Image (cartoon, rainbow, N blue to C red):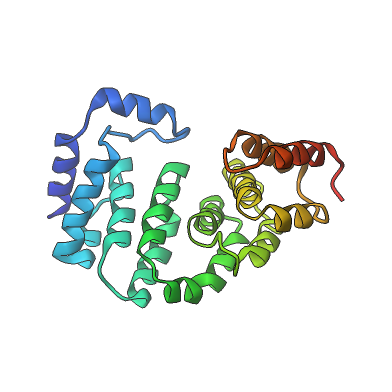
Length: 233
């Protein structure tokens, strides 16, 4: 497909009313057409099978759905890690909202092998220290989607406590990751948080998310409420 054909396809599958609703959930994004994500995923799979490199070259940077489509194609492409990671690094500066970031992470994480996850872990850790909000969020959400495991949890908690970017969507991702860790690895997470300097705002949001989670026990919900009220170390 050419760029013009991609745009025509997106416009043909757009639902204006849905676009208004979707845009209301993504502050700062004004180019939402209203193509539903399952429909985008179907096209991405077709493009990836026909040739991911050619598809990526034909996908424009706008509208919102085109950027989402690009991320899906990178995830669905049948290729080796070296080539996929080149596409990932080129795509990261294009990410401009939480929706594209989180959908991209979910797709990418589901396609990577255990060996590939081990290989890119140092780069994920490095990206978490980025000052670019959606580069940092990408790394944090990838931790949630792919690295919430016993062999990574200690290192992951240390990385989360040292995230430098204070943008809203980065702090929210850190809170989300910590709440998830409490649900999955309660003892280790409680021990770590009890001895770590977590930003007060993140503490409160993390406690809120943990208390809303079905994976966090009643005992841990009580613990996190008390912890969130304490002054950071």
